[in-house]
Image 1 (cartoon, rainbow, N blue to C red):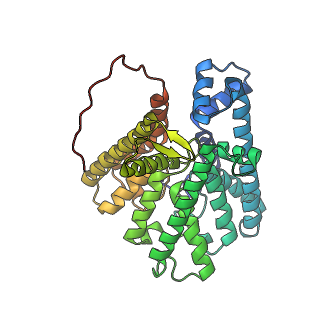
Image 2: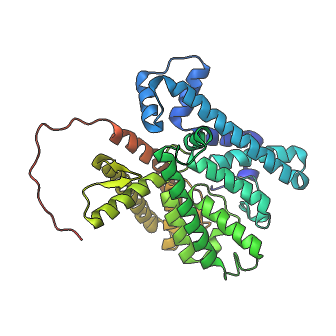
Image 3: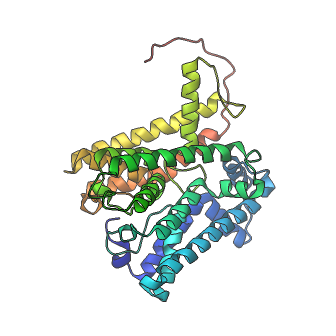
Length: 385
């Protein structure tokens, strides 16, 4: 954000912003198909097939039901979150304003946007000692980050063994990343007088957990990111780059992509021809897709960082943090966003656009069935490492 959302924009402007956040969280394909369903317009077979490939729905005819379920699950979580936040802010903001703020922040949190209506450029720092507010927001961010498809799978299956392989991988990877982020932030910031050190033990734990959640998906912060140590900011960059689950409201390369890359690397170290997970073999094509997403996104981040290093006069870590946050559509910043030059702002805009559509569009393109050649080329060994 280059201007404060709560004070710069009118009520109409804020409604436009949160509407775009909602549509962006649902996804371009889901939102457009939902509109077609409401208008009772036919959905093309190709669109049904593409959504089925992404969601792994049971059949082509189940797409309409899947879209309805996705929208209803989204609205349900946002409504519960809005009620909880309204309850907490009612005594602080007044009933009328608390309702609006509750809805705005619940939608922003579940859709992993990070926009807020708090005092200018303070984000959620005024609630750093309010565990109820932070935990409700963190849960909304987390549920939005794992995606409606995983949530529906959990509600329908209810047992761990019955969950789909994708859901189990998402939950395991997300849990590991949350724990790593929580322990890392707690360890590095524990003695920092500008962040965790002045807080009570209880608030230290809550704020470390909160930032572990929001760094991977949404740009909320209860402590000033600019005051974090260099090692903490680097950890946040890693979490932002990974992001949330495929098909969720989060950005990044996605936890499933990371899981595939880790499993493929472990298989290569052990000398195996194929990577496997939970009793199933991962195809080479799937590993190639994950590698393509990781390599191309790193190239985008590298190129944008190079441009901003030349056009801006900020520290390198500030520039790199800004680019990674933009690409992962997180929104965290060390405070340099409003002061970027025109070239810097345009670069960040492009990076955000590529980050929101790039990996997903690339996944669609790579998922299409390619024509295999009728011959095989001879194998050659090339030195690596």
